[in-house]
Image (cartoon, rainbow, N blue to C red):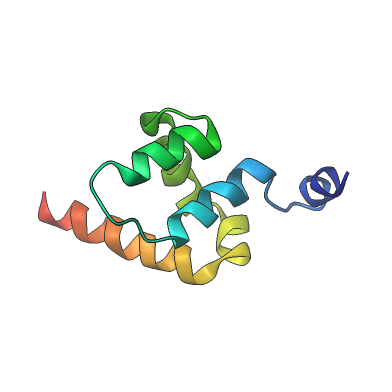
Length: 83
């Protein structure tokens, strides 16, 4: 019910909030993040990264978690500059 109200008011849906929450966490070893993506979100890692990339351009995501979104935007821009 609250999720529907958030979406109606222009907020992020549960899946989007869960993606950002997962990005806030640190992961210890190789494959740990991908395993968490599959187990906790039920997504393939490729789909997860597609959703995450779209979220970085969404002003609602910036309003919800500015620290995480701005950090990930900087990382994305640095990787683009390397190419």
